[in-house]
Length: 327
Ligand code: NDP
Image (cartoon, rainbow, N blue to C red):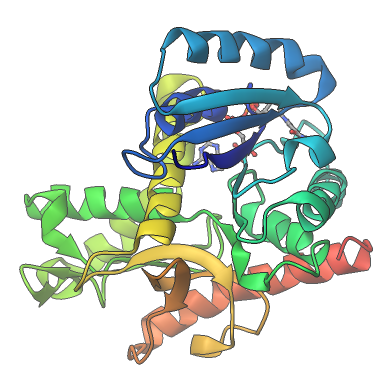
């Protein structure tokens, strides 16, 4: 029988964790037929809640679920991990300055990066979901010098999926008819969802909508969707965030479809003027388990300005965590 793939989920007792674990255990993360062993990392006061979730996972009797481990020690939780989903993060609380937030997350993602470095499997692939995701991924990566840098990624797939859905709704087409969507930059309000390369029915999307809709409705709707969900639901998006994490890892391992691409925040190689090393969102394809940036796209002046603004924010975040000694 196949050795189970070990998937470590941090913040496992949280909202996103609850929406994520059952789908992983049912085979949707890695593919049908691939057995999975779950490792749940939580802070000590949430371990009991994680145990409760593990009881429910048992009660699903998932045929692919080979076992569940729970720990509050990253060195234990990441031991032998093939996939790391870093969901738990320190939320911004009232009166917290940006530097405090970065520092608190440095205290989480630094040690997790080191634990991955020291204990994870050689093929480990990491997706950071916990915010500020791009910079948290950078911190984790900096603490894992023995792991290839491109194994550290951050999630912009939810933004990507939101953009697909908004555009499909506007043009009254099926989501599957939209191709080549791109989210550029940071998973933050400065992110740039790009319709100048997206295609619907083989034609550029930007040419099928008004400029004013693109600039004043589409971009802000995608960028502020998280806040709109909180307003409507009274809680932040969880199932859609979990779904996007599944999409990201599934495509990373199994490959993206021919003739299309997706969005993921991966370490920049300098493409499109994004400073090397920043973990920034790009148009990407996956081949043989590695992300590659789609090359050769012409960037119009409007897009250039938007990409530069979001990348500048990432560069500032990198400087801030570097000043704090977190890299
Ligand atoms: P959620 O499960 O709702 O969110 C977890 C993280 O995902 C947050 O940082 C959140 O960012 C982020 N996130 C990224 N994208 C999205 C999105 N599109 N929509 C919503 N959230 C998004 O948080 P909970 O508070 O329910 O659970 C967090 C859990 O993590 C807790 O159980 C806590 O104990 C645990 N934790 C574990 C740690 C560890 O394992 N070492 C460390 C810290 C916490 P944002 O805050 O911006 O919404």
